[in-house]
Structure formats: structure tokens, C-alpha cells
Length: 495
Image (cartoon, rainbow, N blue to C red; front, side, top):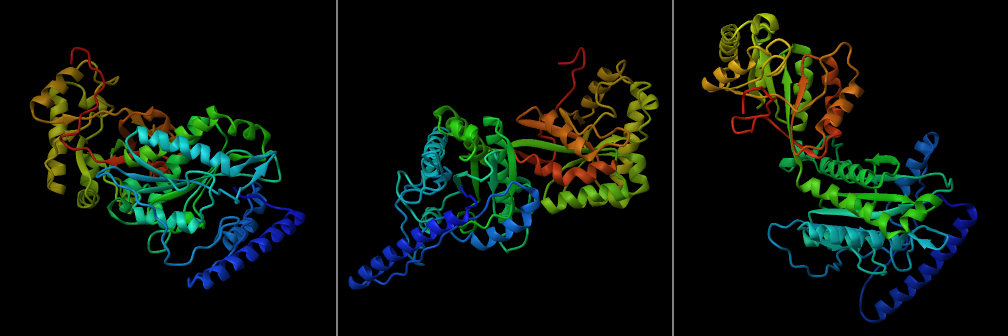
């Protein structure tokens, strides 16, 4: 989409700019003679794309100064609306797919391959894919016609679109540069910085727009990388492009490859690869509207400083989770247990002593420990918990001889137990936060419904929680309740 230009290229661009200015003046004089009042402006954007980390700050400053317009776009007079009529279908999301550039604005070009053509081909495939999935997809341009960015945005806003995705290609003087990057506006609706997973943050209730943009960008980036196998470049929150700043719906801009890179250029001109790109974009959009479900659960707490860190992250994101408490720890810190309840999380029983050999000596010893924990937690929080989790899970090395009998007895008493099907694997010596994130992501196995095991008493878990939630944009985080279908380990002799 954007490329750094040499001095000679700049002179040629300036010549073209002056020619456009002359054309604009002629149009202005013609409009004035007809009794119309219009103001036309011509802007040229040469925002650099620099893969070298050392030049980061320089080109970010250039980008901020230049990003008001897309190369060659004519400004549209304020207040003029060009929206064509579309008939919205009730309950069907409207998604605007914007093939960048068009007409005389060819975008970047290499060996006769023009960005505008690649953009339009991929956008058409995305539209077809989304239409087939039940969405109402609309192209910002349908052919090789120049449409100003202001007009595209005004159309999308007038249509009341639900999402806006702009498709572009990249170019750079270093022809080895490659990969996919996605840009979004990370500012909240009030201009402040917005962080977090929108499906599980305050933005889900009409809050920060920046979080919605981020989640869309992460999903489009993540799924397009999966579908193409392309190199992963940056996910940038500092986009100041008009189409990502002025749209009233969540939006992002994807650069699907480098036309300046011979290998990527040769792939991008093929229908097969264009379809792979389109499939990834469409999949990201679909996950935005239809996220999977994750039940985030924490065992062994409360533990004051560490549970506090976990609760703070969850509160900032407006996420509700489930805490399986240990009675001894509740006795030591009843205020933290009450805070968990006050902040809207689900309380479950884990155990009282966490002494596996004692707890699993017999069915009676398990019931005795459970009832003691139940009373301590009820007295501290007022919650008469119905959910519980076996220490070590329903089947482990300590309870194989009694697990079936305990499970049957607890079910008979009206309690519901939950194991897990994904885990941070954080109950280890000196856990590494980055590894915990990797463990969690890999163990989901793409499931539609995940019960994730974590431990709020582990310092590294609190340290990585914010980043972990960023890395799982395809999931909506919920708390367990009595209606949630349990995840159980297999117990021999039980259905």
C-alpha cells in the first residue's frame, strides 16, 4: 500500500500532483459556472513502510504527518453524501469490504502488477465468502473506479455498517521485506487508549471503540496468517488512516503482502493464493461476530497479592471468571473471597486442606473435607456454592480407587463438578509467563467450548493474564454456572 520513494520518484509524484491540481481547478471553475459551490483538495501520501527496527521512530513521525490521506485521493467537500441505497436485512450484519485505491490511483506497482487490481480481486472473494456465510457484504468500490476515501467512509457510516475492512498491498525499497500486517485505531471513543479483548471488555457493553478495533484486527491478522502461511508482521494500533479513524464501526486495514517482494508478488497474482487470503479475512470477520466460548477458571485461591492482580485485570476488561476456593486460604483472607463475589465472579469449592492423601483416603474423608470448605466459604461470602472441582481433577494418581464413588455421591448430593480441557500448566516450579501463554493457546486445540485451568496463587499467571487474553481474540470469556455443560475426565464405569 505505502512505499518509501526516492528523490526522483518524489519529483515525478510532484509533477503528477500539480497536474491533478490543475484538473481540480478546472473542475472547480466548471462547478462555479454551473452555480455549484465545491472545494476540492489534492493530497499526496508517501507514508513509509520500514521493516528496520532502528528507523521505527522516524517513520512513525512521518506517518503521523502524512496519514490524513491515501495517495492521490481527492478530498470530498464536507457534508456531501454519496451513499448508494442498500436494503439492510434485519438481524444480518453489514460488512463493508474496501478494496484500496482504484481508477487513476493505482497504489503501489511492480513489474506491471498494480495494487488496486489485487485489492479488488481479494475483496470480491471476501464478499462472496461472507455472502455465503449469511452476512450482507458490500464493496466500497465494485470496479476499477476511483472513489475518494471520504466517500467510502461516509457511505459505510450512512449504511449503518457493522464492520469495515480495508484491503491493501505493501511495497518497500528492500525487496526482501515480506509478510502480512494489520493496522487499527487503538484510541477509545473518548480519545483515550483502549486495551483488551472487546468480546470480554467494557466495549462489549458500548464502551471503548479502540478495543473493538483491536479485536477485529487481531482476528483478521491471526486467521489470514493461518490460511496463507505468510510471515507475520506487525499488528499496529497507531493507525491514523482516514478509513480506520473516521468510520463509526469497528475497522481495520490489512496489508496482505509486498508487491516489491518477488515471491509474494508471484503468489498474490494467483487466484489460489488470493482465495487463501480472502478465506482468512472472512474467517476473522466471522469469529468477530460469532466467537467461541471460554470458561476461565482459577484454582487454589485466594492469595492476597496474587489474586488481587488477577482480579484487577479481569475488572479492567469486564470479564467474569470462576474461582474454585481452598477453605484454609479463605480463612486467612476472607476479604479477598468476598471481593471475588462482589466483583461478579462465580465461586466454587475446591477443598479445605489440599492434602491429597488425607482427602482421598476414602469417600467419607473427601465428604468431610468438602463440607468443611463449604461452610467456611458460605460464612465468609454468603454463597452456597453448587459447583466444585476435585483437587488434581476428578481422576488423578491419588483418587483412582475412590473417584467413581465420590463423583456419584457428590452428584447425588446436588453438586456439579468441572474438570478442564485446556490449561496454562502454571502449577510448576518457576513458570515462565511466555510459556504459560503458549501452553494455554496450544491446549485449546481450536475447540468451540473451552474450560481453561489456571491458578490465581501463581505470580506468573497474574503477570501474563492481560497478554493471554489479547492472544485469544476468538474466545468470549464467561463464568461457569449451573447450566453450563460440565467437562469431565473419563472415569471407568461412569457414563
